[in-house]
Image 1: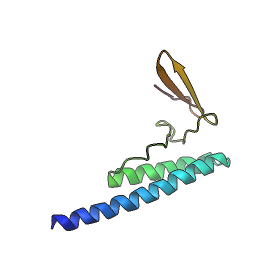
Image 2: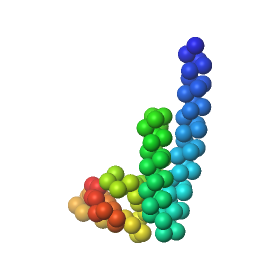
Image 3: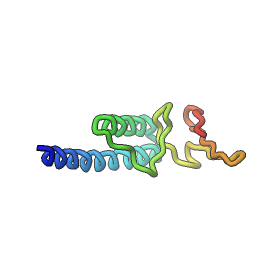
Length: 98
């Protein structure tokens, strides 16, 4: 019985990772094409999938925890190094992450 559950869990994780990858790619593309509302919606959907399936977001994908906007350095994210700390500021809402 537990073997079947593990297989189902693995399938769910695979599907979730695939969909999250698609949504994060779409969010970056939407932001670059001037559709920030869609970019936020795609990040929100991927976070919902992460919460339902207990899967984490991809490693290289950064987003603002406050406004759910995908962060791209030089486009809508400011990155500074101050006293051995990396300070990241969202260009949309001004949220600071250290």
